[in-house]
Length: 230
Image (cartoon, rainbow, N blue to C red; front, side, top):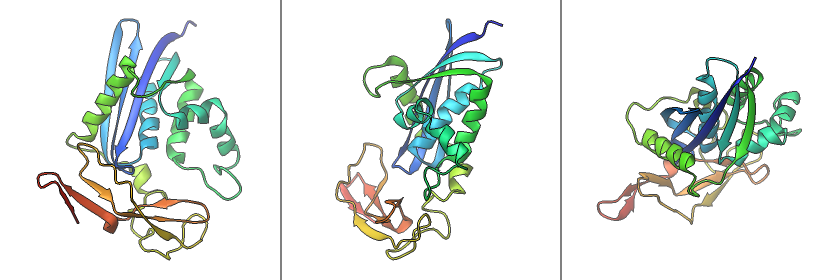
């Protein structure tokens, strides 16, 4: 059987990270072009990069030969360097102590990869690549759109720092390695044009370097008065 040859271009992001997120994906088959996008209330950059590819592959109705183009080294390297297969073989542990993250999405992606013949290609983001730039626009529009979805996989995961019962104060126990977390002041505070808030500080595990973002560390951005307040 001659498989259809599909080009899949994708991009995803969150503002801030974690924060409101979105993805954009373009499917091309000859002269036929289809675009998809969605926005989420709370998620991460990496989850949106993965979700874009999952949604794109999920739209294919027949077994296909697909070239994926993504600017996410996290996704492309995990596939091309065999990381995700090692995680799965190791009961979804990255090493003896650390659990892999985004397991729910990796499982979904692996099912799709078993269905289609897929090649992953890394491209540099924000470098004038027409489809990548278009996917970025789709993702940004989704982030700033209405009716944002809930990323249930993230909301129910250990990586969600805003989930009830998660890390809240300096001296709390890291959920990954049980060390005591410390407070790190955010001195960079780079604010994007449409960003509504940033984190005044983070809680960090000095042992495994897990980063936790807590609700009370949020600082709202008042752009009308060009000032910052909580």
